[in-house]
Length: 366
Image (tube, rainbow, N blue to C red):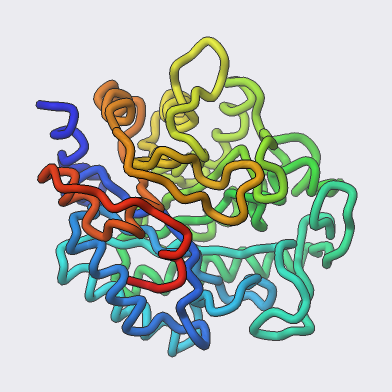
């Protein structure tokens, strides 16, 4: 088996059977007027499935909580119209031979008053902070926490009913679940705060609720990161032991696959080891992992000083294939390269020429 053959080999976990190891990374696109995924969105995802992607993880979809949304024209995952729109997407992706999961999302303190659906609702956060030392949003009560957990569970149940192949819970990048993880934003003194294990409690309860609301073998992917939008250099865990402490409650709660978000997949996570974050997570939990971060491009996702997502020229994936060949991780998520090349997997397999990615491509959904 060649290095490229491994990338195109099947992957199976319970009922999830993928034709290859390539995952479409979740990317917010804001092309859902009225917060309903339309035929344009359906075609966008169908095209990637037709182009050879094994598993599509959708853009972030807002769960049914009044403060979940922080952006215009992002799709919701509640309400008859939005769910009907997602049903069309699922059916189209399946007809093209692909598999698909929604990413379930609550932005937390990132939300500002004036946003859909109720402009009067502020952002919600574990301690009412939008950044360390900056208190400007609603501090969540125990009742708020229970409502949000229930909303995640309902969204997962709806996803299973619609025929999705699993769900991804967004626990990364400084959004709500990650705000509970981050000591800089979580100063709670109840069971949802304190040490690192205490700060994982909210996420663990979300995962348990999602598991209880779905079939025992319905796949749950959990996405986490060290970095935040608010601080690219932030780190939850400085050592492998800290990472093990962080991951254990989440793994025990019912995560099937960890999606380990980094800005550059080739960077090692801790000194003295060649493993990246996905590699360490697999080593510590024994669970399958997805690696991600500037795959197929020569410029990292969101460089310091860049305005928005950085562009990039096509780049070699030899290092990626070497790591995959050593079973450092199981799946590979591709982001920006799939915006410029909807058929990136097929082009890669067939030796086709890749199109460079630039920011202008975000202005349309193709």
